[in-house]
Length: 224
Length: 230
Image 1 (spheres, chains in turn cyan, green):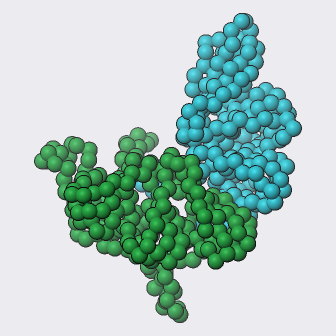
Image 2: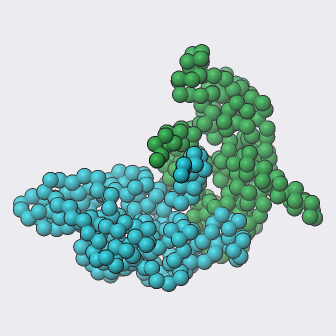
Image 3: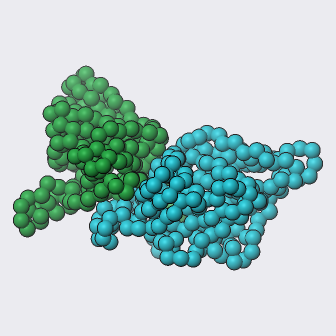
């Protein structure tokens, strides 16, 4: 399998080349195009897994693209919804946490699990549900805007709306942006993610929920 | 204080390195990330007088700024005694630009302010009755003093020198020199030009100075989206 990214950073698209028999799993709606020898199968990977994903703000079903056995390679083009960059993460020695809406695709050896347990990942205010990757292979994560890669040595704070992914070597906790709840709300920053340890994290340079709110203010009220 | 504007023009971010005694004032909600040693203090977006009535006055000034100039009610002051970095980003896709003020002034349109440092005074300026006709031109934010002003555009930023006259769409103006005179007018072509050209009202700048334009227009985006919503 070969993955290369095109049209970075503003309108990135992943070009996945599958050898005969190989497959890639993607978030529903991520497919842009594919060659005729690629078969699409839709599945949830189990009812519980699907429900957990649904709860985490993703889709219940995911699509798996498989190149048919033969002599030809199969090609699939994948893209995220909002304009922005993509990043390919190598899962194996490193494991990753992904902010749930950042998930675009993964190879079959990677298990992507929605973390719904625990208070710290339960804040729906900025849609922060996290996915954890285990196994071996590749994950494609998408961002709204450009991606800033940060090497954390010690401590670092990121607005939850700007998170894409981070290595599991980093400890993280969700905290208020300021000391008190009122100050956090007034500051407009809401919740932030406080990282500590050593590892890499990827941030997106725009905040999807902030953008949605601002755009919504300019749009007419929905008729019920 | 040092700064870097990265990822422009589509998705620009502003990274500011703060040293002892530096204060960076930013629009509420614009922070992307920071070192924990960078302190954030939230305050009303207005100069504050003494006592209770001073606070009340500041509150109303901040409210007015919110509703007529499109700024946030609160702003955040970032400081760091030991040295550290903070990253800021605007809401829409687009660029960030720096204007260094040395005792001169600049006028910003609604929502263009991102951050500032130094000794800058921000006040609202009434655009005159002619501004009533233009959707965005009712009030401007006048920035004066000595310091750095970071402003943002929806799309790319174009600095256009004016010597004579320049006609622009009202929704594409980001900033301009107060030395320029301006008037609102129809785009030309008579009645058909006004209702069918898709340009709405335009602004005609005259004199000598600089106008900063943005390559996209929020009103155009939302009026395109509106009829397509369920």
